Image (tube, rainbow, N blue to C red):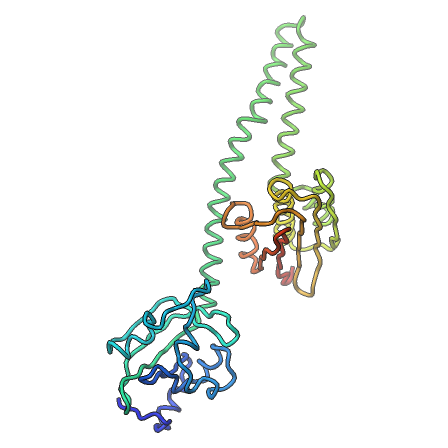
Length: 333
């Protein structure tokens, strides 16, 4: 196909404009010569004229998501101009008008034009697919974490409460067999039983606090922070929500406070849990050294996964200090 592209082909214009996929054409000098409405919209522009004549690489593909420059000589999109070959890329990122990055998959194929070889680029927005993949990955990590937690619980029961209960039974048996030593044996048995109850209570609280089920997020966080070794300011709604939402909010706050105490050297924490329309907003701020990163620890990563599976978002900000903020959709719950 040979195109002189001063928009010489009304038929081609109409055909490309009607495609659901985003399409733009690049001239022999690398400039944008056409962009259909899907491409214009996905790239953040309002009209094709804003793209026409602009250098395609500098406009659409100049940087990697980490901010590092993408050399034009390495640009796969322009390879058809030089080598005359079609290039297909499963995942890349285009730069939108506002500077944000759009995850895309694309094909760039050579096209003969009246003034030389150009290229036609067809691309698709992968945002939803990547989000779906991340949710699936989060679910897989949650399953793995749940299995690991079950194993930990088994070890804790064996090494803690189970051993104490065995000793308590042995003490009771000793008291039955040796009446002269019954008082001392029963005293030890009672102490072991009390310790076993304490161990089981702590284990149950770590799994899912009873107060959270019975009285909701406000009461549960009041109980959680009552024993915290630094001041915690609470501004928490007393409204009830779906169990999975309350659990996500509770464990997010618990993890953030634990990090503030153990790792951040904080002297105070503020917690806010409030409904905002159909969303529950949670924020935990401390005045510590900052630097929290889900990638560096399983605690925050687990919270990030729990939030993602519910369709929410998690953000970290600050330094010094850290703010862990999440939004959870409430839906019909």
